[in-house]
Length: 378
Length: 260
Image 1 (cartoon, one colour):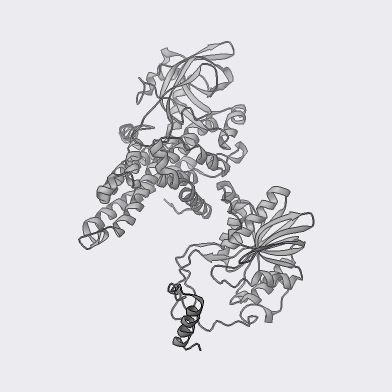
Image 2 (cartoon, rainbow over the protein chains, first blue to last red; image 1 turned 180 degrees about the vertical axis):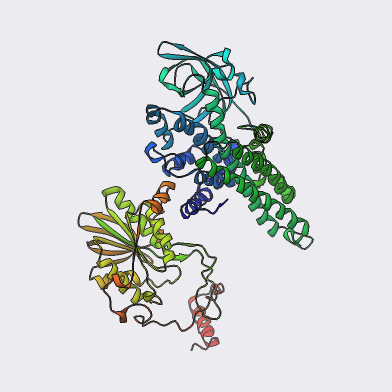
């Protein structure tokens, strides 16, 4: 498979890298420390079209491909995992399902402002009792004339409260199990839609993670995404795409930690020579570099597969599983190679290690990815 | 209005490495960028386009690889791009370069031409003003601000300790300082359009009306005798003495160095 980036992809990567270094990196520590959503960065990214990279131009996007979008999430996450996931959740989970399953009217009304970055997107599937077992949805939607009435709650919603447009899943027919789940587009500000607690997290602390509460929330019938009962399929297919974004985030974290560590071991001297002169360090760096490169190959392959194939679940699962585990391993080694300094919050690798952990959990845990992969082989 | 911006592809480094044998710059492995002063000039043109509307054309003379900086210009928002490239133009000094670029610009329509003050790989600051001479139009160099007012351009021209505000009638040529502005980022869609929808027109020797004697190495009166990395001057010594003692001190130092 050919992973050589095209000229436009290479130039886009330069753009993302410059932006990440100039605009994102200087704020990364503060965003983590204060747990404040980086709204100004999102506004800057909106102006530059970063919020609609793979969305076609006719829907307000940039008309680029999935690999270019992956390059953006990777470069942003190299310096700030929070900023990476904001773009990923917005693009893959908020905007993409409308692009794929929405009617022209829905695309016109909801996808265009999302792709232009005027509005921020989010995706609400998880519930207190429905995590990996997403079929255990308790949120209900009952059709009443021209409106659906939503009741229930969602947890761990990335971009929660900050987002304007939410893809919300709810049971329209409990008796049908997963075939009774439907997807809805819900706007912030709709009566009966409120936000509960904000989660206090280990990592990606600037990313807003909220509980969503629906109390007799009436939404227009035309906000049903796809048809009634197709919600579960929409959720799973959307997550296939989302996993590529998270894989890119994990790749960025691993790659960023590796770069920081290379710089550090060259500078840090012990026993009269720099750490990089010790063979142990050299072997550690070599192992880290190989894993980052292998992860990159899987992630780029999945990105290309999303644009070329109808189904890319296994490619996405492999990319996310491997990149997330590499992110955890490489950031942990990065902290170790930094020694005592690596454990302090002065150094970025400490934050990267905390940020990396979530990539093994959200949008399907590593165990779920293994289930998806095994499903192909067994 | 129509604005032509001259941009040059330069190596992205201030640590110039020289080939010890040929004495020329080693460009391999060094990423190439739009010369910073030129990029500021392009930003100034795009800002004019944003505020009052303008058609912005970027033009570069160089090898075929310079296509990349023209695409970048298009991705930032320029409308058209021209690459003046031919082996016959190779080895040009500032005179031959300005002759060639002026011949190319003559084929375009323009009200305003913006060039960078100077290139970080050459630092001559000659090509811009020379182009204006070839075209017979006024030139204001060292601009730290450019505004358009009707048929005129108001330029804030920088000096070491002051600036002049100059009103100049178009068509004219302005050379821009890198400090003038913060050039905009490209956009991902702009990059894709630059490669997929837009075109970089290549003009070769045949496309230009120039004498063979005035282009390339042949048209270059400047010959590089030797190239060497600049030696860094050590920090000066500060001496605080009264006037008379200072004068004695200086005389002593000048004698020491055999200046007097």
